[in-house]
Length: 214
Length: 394
Image (cartoon, rainbow over all chains, first blue to last red; front, top):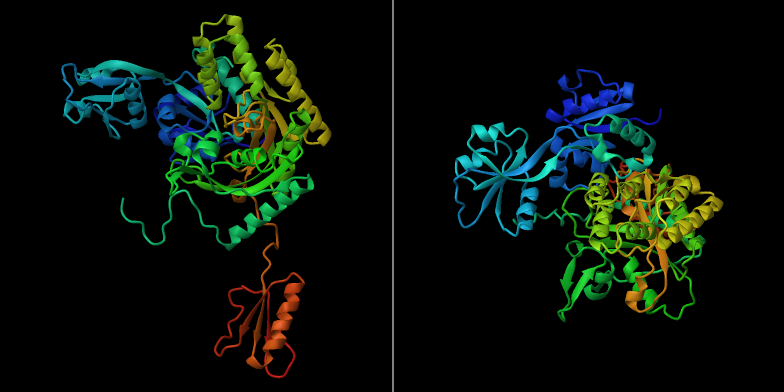
């Protein structure tokens, strides 16, 4: 087998689903990888090396080529806008990006939007022909309308339970989100065989694979 | 913003200290020599150009152009590439020169990009333009020269990928006749290397299953010359077929150059500049995360400057190569130090002159008291003393 493939893996929610998908595709990955505190984990069985990264940083590692490929949500890709190959829609970690508000709230003259995704939010409202003020938050975005920081929030919605619990409503869904396989521009050429083989294996087991045949 | 501190410089620009400058010079010299051996003459153009001529022609997005106002109120740009300025010169000052023109350059270019490490606002490119030859031979020549140049720069492990804009234009025009928006959408996806989005777009176009699969099949068209045969099955469009024939001829020439093993055909390649009209290519080096070379054919660019001739060329991203190439052993030649007493200065300077005439480097200095740690820092290869009445001592 050729060179080791360096894979930037998102820690947390997506990792478990991605590892599961890899296993279904016949790639041997030990069980305890994500329990370890190690950040760089060799997977000699698969001729890979996992780089355990914060999800939002995955496209950065891949763009600079310190990771050959990576797995990352479409939400992060759209927010970060990195120059990478987007090879596959893995169909895992499905959710959506939505505009959310309190049901009865009348926005002031200047619409204020709180979000973890300032680029996505600004672009969306711009396309709607609205100029808004964007406030960047780093977590618990649902708080913003509840305590009067913002009129709307733009955030990822998986089940909608958190919204319900806090009396918020989804006004509009902006786009659907799934995890993607991305590749560095140079690695995609220099390690093309290994990357193509991985794509072929993953495509056979991806949920809803019919929608994304290469 | 607070006032800059004394040591700061604008984000995106770099100082090149002597060590880096020496390496940059060495790469520049080896690459330009290589290009000269292929018959390419060096050319220099100004850093400043008019926005309305070279600025527009460079097809660099406006937000990435550095613009300034001349004292007469005209908008100027810092050149963002060398292809557009050379097109201007080839169409004006070199108008009467017989074609083809073979020109080479090494120059700094400017792009106002996001402020982040590794994305320089000013960087060096070394490249060539071959003006006035539309044949596959010319395209093969620039690719073969790009490979030779990369080798001359000291890059050992590399690959090239080559595609054809004409093939994509033909293919999309046949699949989506008259639907320029849809064609453009597909090209945008390829330009952004978004294969997932490309598949989604093909699905959304309401095409017959068969046509949709043909378009998606494009994403698998990668490999050797056999790709051209496979692609010929996807389209009966004249432009697409002509483009494939052209690409095949380029490939055959590359086989005869003995470099086709470095080249891969990828028909999804569209080229980062919108002035590309035909064959496009990119070069990649192992260990460097970004491409180190890009090029292609631009048959309509010179027309914008009033001379309707085809052209093809490439640029090496010399600054990036600098980051990835090791110093050849013993490259750093340290100078000799000649220390003299006033009475023997003429002799010492003559000795220094002799070393320099032989191509060596020598530094001379008047001997001073309490300066006996001459070679401590290893700055000099040797120290010669001209002192008293004796001959020089090492």
